[in-house]
Image (cartoon, rainbow, N blue to C red; front, top):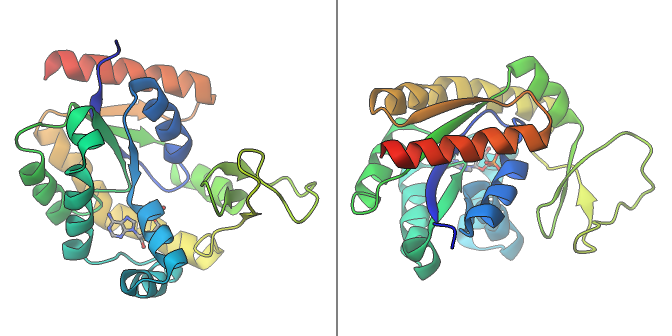
Length: 221
Ligand code: AMP
């Protein structure tokens, strides 16, 4: 039986985290916990959180640390995450969130924090072409040759551009990443838990590098 894993994936928007997280989640049989997906679900459901989050997300801003920590604390207490582990995608995004996560995961520490590294100019063009299934979150790349409406091959849902993948919001999110999330890379490097993986390679190769980083993180931990 393959052991579970507790992982954090850092990396710029458009670095390929979503795609790799789906594969890692199947490989290690652990839930892929994307805080962006959780917020988008709340937006679709029209909850109080969703109404607030939509405003922030459309501008490319960040939802408050306290709300995000509460959401993640609750999710990580569910039996699947307690039993086998999880892959965190999009959390933590600030140093206060990382400190709160240290506290939440004190009994079962993270195996490895992976920085999936893709340069800014490369993610800019990837994000402009990104399309996502509204229902299941499968990612696609637009070439301009698609017939519309674009239907998801996996679940039959609508494939669309995310509201926050406009050029202004993308630039703002990448600036915020550099300001607020890059300090996390230093935070985890100092703790000796960081693995930097070059994300500029075909998806199968990146996946191989990621699984190797998890194995060596586990051995070191
Ligand atoms: P993502 O799908 O990870 O790019 O997240 C989409 C949007 O959700 C972000 O641009 C933020 O507005 C919000 N968001 C997701 N995760 C977090 C987080 N950990 N802290 C604050 N805001 C978040």
